[in-house]
Image 1: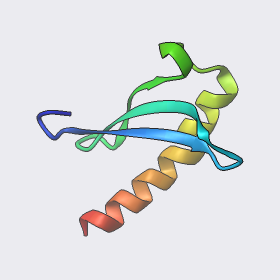
Image 2: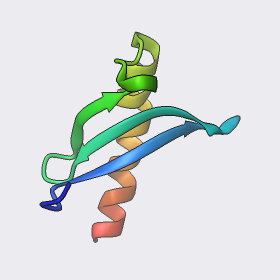
Image 3: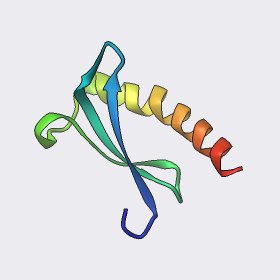
Length: 69
């Protein structure tokens, strides 16, 4: 992050915006997730990883491409 090669996202559930869901490190160069951790730095379960990779990541890529243009 210090080299400005990645971004940190704190993903929250819209129904519980004050409750942490997962923290994601996103590579600006490769447009992919480098790390994804849940509560207390635990690995998220399969359903959460599926959401992050199949729903959130395509959305983030689309928005960040638009911002960079």
